[in-house]
Image (cartoon, rainbow over all chains, first blue to last red; front, side, top):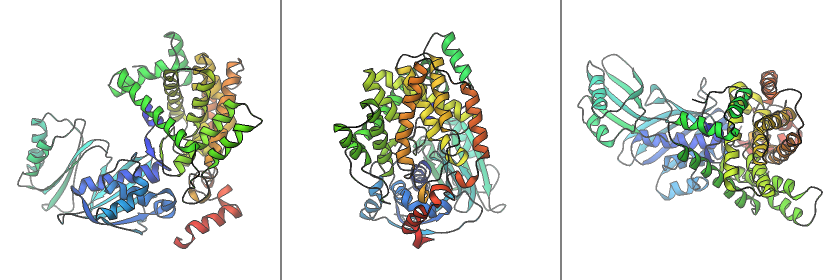
Length: 220
Length: 293
């Protein structure tokens, strides 16, 4: 059974838990995955997001998330203006991605330092979200747990090196997934944890030579 | 752990422990979240603060939503009710508060989804109006919100709280049933009476469809919140008078699930029928989104 605050809650900016609150969380998690402030963003809206998004403020909500705001932040209605004032260029377009959830967006970002990331995610109801693709990799990420994501060399021992760091920091892994595009090239791993993942643990992982990119996504 | 699945379980736990329904729900949440009573209480108290602020903000606002369909009705009704009206002041306040919170939601203000954003005006409308009439302290309203959450947990377990799954009976219907049980507890009624109130409110919303104009949480949602809040007060008073629902609470929930399953998808939040497809509804939709289609 769910918890009391799944019923009375979340505290959010209206009007829609899926089209507004969930959309803010998608923007926020996309920014966390990029790992820095985005400077250029292309948002592709699919299905119901594309159809009724504007009336629900989905564009403002995603912009707010990209600015790092939470889904109960009263600055959400002003987010598009705030983003352009902060030098963040966001473009919205509509795109049909065929067999995906009706409330889906793809957020392609270039960060301040030139770092790039592409995130596909869906708002699945009640403000809950699921990220389904990161940089072309199939993933499943809810943003409800502290999450460590690595893109690393696909060879024996790398997964163990990363999990060893977490073990030493006494961080319990709740969910873990490894995927890759082709054998022996690059793999992507997602570790979701019950405990907070410290920046110290993240730094150690990021400095493992076989780890090309490490991302720390805190619950949002 | 306090285990319950049905309303009968919940009333049993309260009667065995000789406590209020809200106590059973608080204990459930403390154990589930692995925190303590104080932090769970604080979190609900914070929800109440957000509800009260939304009422304050919405009841004086004349702003319109982006679509122009809603906004300003809470103020208009409040101004009218100051001087006259057929209904008593408790009912009028429930109407005004529910409109206020729903309008704040439509205008991208801060609210508590309870259980959803589309039905967020019903609990604040009914509970805050009742608390003024009953002169109960803030703690009683917070406790009432826990009772309401308990009802919502059970409905969610055996039916649904999503318009896309069960139509509006799952959103405004559930919210009204939750509020009815909470008001009974606030007024000093028994756990069984709370269950009767819940059943009476939900029964009256069975079959209610979700057919919003242009797919927005505005028409008929905002005004329906006012009706939902008043209906919760009606159900609570019937139950407090000792009147029972012939069909018991858990069976009413089961019926709402069955009815939701039988409801065509066109009337479950897709805006493919009903009010959304009336000539005026289509005209509004075309004006808002026409160039994008």
